[in-house]
Image (cartoon, rainbow, N blue to C red):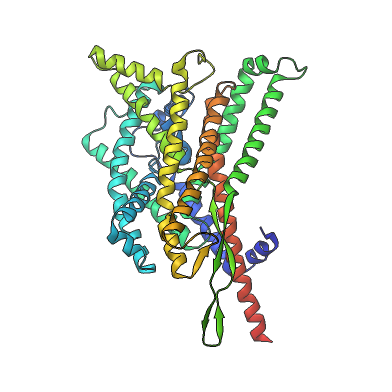
Length: 471
């Protein structure tokens, strides 16, 4: 990063106005996150905040939603659904673009085609927001009635109230989509990613304070692990957590920035008196092309058995009730009380790792098209040294990406499992989401800084042009 260039660019009014506009949009988002849905009295919401997330049995999907929505779940905010419908719609459109030739042709039509696909994505977001609002309300209702001790907080809601709650959550999701696109138009970072990052950062003080309280109120784990040190076990515990967080952050930075460079050459072309091409360059392929999407998908899938367990356990049928109990046991998140000698304890970690690997391959095949790259290189007169253009280049790129995926998917799976393994030795369930949060913050921060640097370079070039014209 050229920090001097970035600082020089920030000094210009154009760049300052863009950054202030983005900060204003993020501030509006945080203000909207504190508006509750029209549900109940403030005392009920206060009890929900006090009871729900102090319980270690909370489903992981709810914890994910609470983190990515900036605490919207604990206050039952209208931003509860968040950007999930828009992300889901974008992924569906990416899959359809690869599967439907008409959409694929439209995407290659330039700016017009991309605008049409973006419009289809917005239209698809609306029904997804409605359906996810309904599912989230039922999921929260089930979890709060069993975990928070408040009973059925939606019990007295009429049909009109249900429709109003669904409309509020759907409106919140559509407003977030609009705010994200406003940020993206400023060409400083991806709007949706910045909204998610700000939501995570807003929850870090609460996560740290909750972890600190769990340490100061229960030194048993720290004493059992660090009892050979003649210092406060709490102090050692905190220092170890800080060291682990620092090392994990450094590791994620290196992994996120890792890429394979493939050398490209362009043939010389003579047109008139000019010679084009004849240069060598590199095609960078990132180690982890899928980002954090596989972890979020895997977590969502593994929350389904937990949800089914909570539903089936209350069924009158003995068979279904036993099945619900078994699902809750098989897919329980490991903790300090987990019996590591029982093979059932390894079902959740193994399934988590396997799903992360599967979704990494799946999403990478969506975002990276070896066929499109090979065709583009062939049209531009480019080739990979030692590889024939066309089908051979496509197969070569596919093999490179598959090998990178094998290593990258293993790293993503390990990052997802590190917090779960740490939870088995350290008290406090809030550490569970550290791997996801650090990966998102690091990836978005680096990408945003790159775009700020490129915008600063454009602004300073304009300054140089004005100075040259004034002379």
